[in-house]
Image (cartoon, rainbow, N blue to C red; front, side):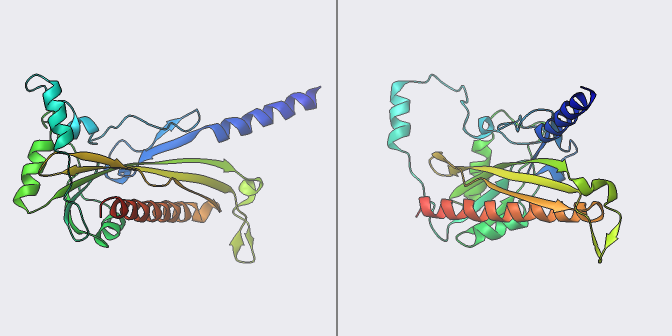
Length: 243
């Protein structure tokens, strides 16, 4: 009976370790808040904090004037985009003073990239789209692209964790496996008309097993590789959708 209780206790501890996860913005390195932990399965849509932009900043209802059926019909009729290969694109990564280099490299394959600050100022107006569109128009930019993203991860300790410091033929016993995935979404905003669209790339996942002494390096490289894959896929989907 005692052994059975111990077995169930150990099993519960493993489930608890697997259930907890970390969710952080792709711009987490620029923010003071750091990663947020949830003792529950991965949260698909966490709240944006720490200077992140929101869709309401760019496409929310301004409250200026009455909304009528005619205005809606006009918005539908005038919906258009000038985005095409070679276009000048103002690129913002929500929450970051400058987009990741890997993101800029991915977009640069099809567009002329104009990187801009994606942090929301504390004194920013409720709607930022008009000021962004005016700034973009002054630089000859046709399209604004704002990218949001979260990295979700969970990790488990392996059997070797207690002896990961013991050298074995120049290596260390693997002690931790981290499973990570990345979710992105991009808002495409036409400078001239204010028309907008959303592009969501594939969700990429990976898992890395690492010893204690190299875990930080391996997990940082894991995060970077996931970002590269997701950014390249996003840029490719954007180019395919707007030709």
